[in-house]
Length: 222
Image 1 (spheres, rainbow, N blue to C red):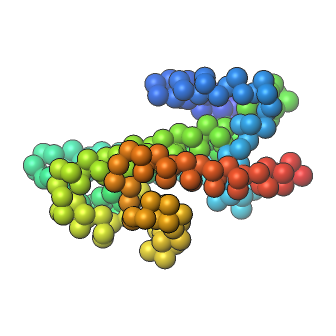
Image 2 (image 1 turned 90 degrees about the vertical axis):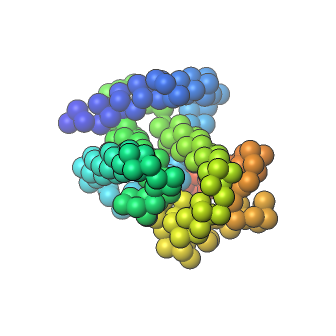
């Protein structure tokens, strides 16, 4: 019964701590319209089938995220202990950034849990989808920057690793090709090679996701 309320509290405190303090910058947008923070509603699309199982499903998602994150940390530490330049085994065989993947999955489950709070009991509840979307894009940006650093440091060795291993989320190659098509068309490359290209890619997907959220925002009110 209190789990969604706890989830909302944890989500709020999480985004008000550390890097998440940036959430303060968009809270004043609520004065313009409460719907501003609903511009990330597209992130709910994968979980709409859960229905009344949303609370247990969000808890399972959080556990999976924490598990992936923990195992990937141990994998990374083991690779450092072995003196390997590139961790390309265990979880790193399926994702080049499994720690970020684990964090995204965990925070997504927390976001789902926070979104289930009853507004009548908790007062005005800002939608958590837009803050999560911004945070997710920021993490993707950090991962892309790390890729550029690894390429400069390890050259073709890391490029070969990139060719055989998914970026963050292990997706079928055809689906990944479709998702990354806007970025490839914009920068004329498979991956951004500098900060300017990285910011351009993030802006493109930000616009796509926000625009996709507009019709979904309407239907979720019905």
